[in-house]
Length: 172
Image (cartoon, rainbow, N blue to C red; front, side):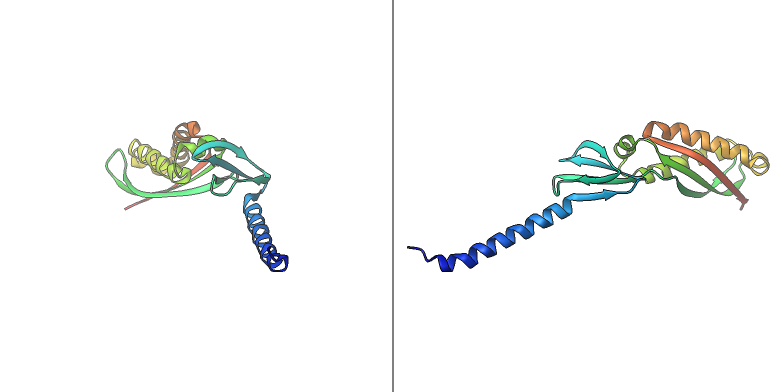
């Protein structure tokens, strides 16, 4: 016959270890998102839902959460480019953008901010190469608005909205 006096400490130890693991599991499952944050949740690699703001529940190991801010963000792009009349210039542009569709932004690229940087740099290069040096220096606002329009039309299908673009030019 088993001695119940010796089983009590073992049983208590097993119950406390189980309770500790349960608390850790629940603690790592609960996430709190601010008003301007959203989470794209992937379950076993498949997109499940956009969640937030507030308290959300994510199953550890099974769910993966990608955080996205809905605040307006700024991105600086710089490079040396040639104008349409073959004058080399250093151009720096600041593009402001905002995520409007979390699902398309997260699923459209591995890193949506890097994708914005690449698209904005391509749009900047296309805009500067299609503009003469005189127009670039004299009508910076017009060139910046063209840059903003070009970037916006390329990023709109990805769930991103371009707010504004500013341009700074110096000849080399």
